[in-house]
Structure formats: structure tokens, C-alpha cells
Image 1 (cartoon, rainbow over the protein chains, first blue to last red):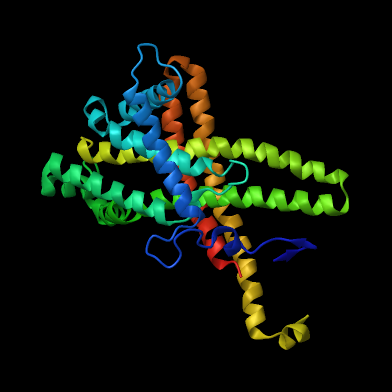
Image 2 (image 1 turned 60 degrees about the vertical axis):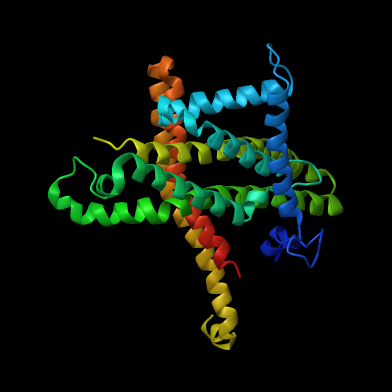
Length: 254
Length: 85
């Protein structure tokens, strides 16, 4: 696209990556796959190293792992599911760190690509969450009780069920995984586009005028700081929504 | 204006209309969530100011509220990406 003499790359060009390793085999990897591998390995390393060297006073990696676990426990599990949600701690903590690591590559210099701006992993995680909360809903309330509590929420006037039940059916069982995945994906796409826009603007202005290029460059630095915040926030929101859905399926409202 | 429109290729016009629709669609989709997030955050801040001891709970609930409200704007953004020529 050419906007006022500014060569802006087409959107597809920013998110499609050529195969780098093992081309032609089923294990072909591109930048997205490598980023996910990095995120998975980093998550495993953090908890593996922290678990193998247990010091009485946490330091280094152990400190990071312990404060992460503590953060997920205090502000995600206890706020939404309650004490019996402790068994979901491994799931929620690894989910938080995995999403955080695959988001944070957005601001790592020379890598600069958020892997979650491709829909594959967000939708996989969201469908996993869908299976988990439906499973625990059926397990804790029975299949009939779970359907009754989620489709006919108590405390609603009888006549309103004509409107409420279809809405609940669509929103609980169909839209939830998609809105969960789209929230993560679209935030990452928007962040990446924002950074690319200011980077392209700085580069173009630098080629022609030099001095005004400082303006978009300052914006670029500010936006990078903002995107670090967004990476944390999206990992947190994905985790807390997972916890909310599991909590809602386990403890129905009375 | 009209003669120019009559001379343009219909396919080109569809592309142009798509671009207009994408831009307008995203703008319209951002109005409601913008007001909504403002309300959510404003009320969360007044709750935190009244009862600083329950600020942690208010903050968590605020992020939840933002996440649910924001979804609509993001769907608008997705439509914008899909409609881009």
C-alpha cells in the first residue's frame, strides 16, 4: 500500500514468514514456530531450574518462578475460583508464562514478532480451555445440572427465558472460545501493526528530512514500552478469563 | 463526479467501497467500547479511592470488565483487517 509517498508493506507481508528449517518435511519451522519453541523451552527451563535448586532464600530464576506462581495464585485463582481452584495452578501458571513469552518476542530487538498474532495457538489454547471448563462443569454439577444452570440462570423471571436462554446458549458454548482467542490475537496484531507503522514512518522520514524523524522515533520507543505492558496484560487476561470460566462452571450462581 | 464514476471499472469501485466500509466500520465499532471502558475504569477508580484496602479486588474486576467490553472493539478491528483491499 502506498500512503502519501510512504511505502507501507501489505498486511499479509507482515505476518507470513517463509520456512527456515526442515523445509519439505512435516516438521517445517518458520519464525512463528521457532518463537513458540522458544516460549515452551523458556517456560520449562524456568520451572525446571527453579525446581531443581531449591534455596531457602529465593534468588535469580527461583525468585522469578516463585513470584510468578505467587502472582497467579493471589490475583487469579483466589480471586475467581477460590481455595479449591488450587489444582488448576499448574495449568494456569504454565499458560500465563507460555503466553507471556510468546508475546514478549514482540519487543525483543531483531526478533520483533509476537507469535500470538497468528491465530493458530490462541484458538488451540481457547479450545483447550473450552474442553476443560465444560468437563469440570459436567463433573461438578452433572450433565443435566450444568446445562440447566448455564442455560436457565436462576433468579430470572420465567418469561424472560425466551430471550435469555438462546443468548446464554450462544455466548457460553459457541462465542466464548472465539472471543478468548480473538482477544489475544487481535491485541497482538494491533500492537505489531502499531510498531511497524511508527518504524516505517521513522525510516521514511530519516531518508528525506532527518530531524522530524525524531518525532515518530520517540513515539516508537513509547509504544514499545506500552507493548511490554500489553504483553503482560494479555497473558494475565487470558489466564484470569480461563479461571473465571472454570470457576463459573464449578460453582454455579445461586 | 457522476461521469467519472460511470467511467470507473466496477471492480475498482468495489475495492474503494470496501476500504471506506472498513475504515467506517472500525471507527463505529470503537465508539461503544470506548464509552464502556471509560465507565468501567472510572467507576473502578472511584471504588479504589473510597476503599483503598479493597483496591486489589477492584483492579482484578476492572481488568475483567475491560476484557469483556474490549471484545466488541476487537471484533470491529478483525472486520477491518478482513475487509482491507
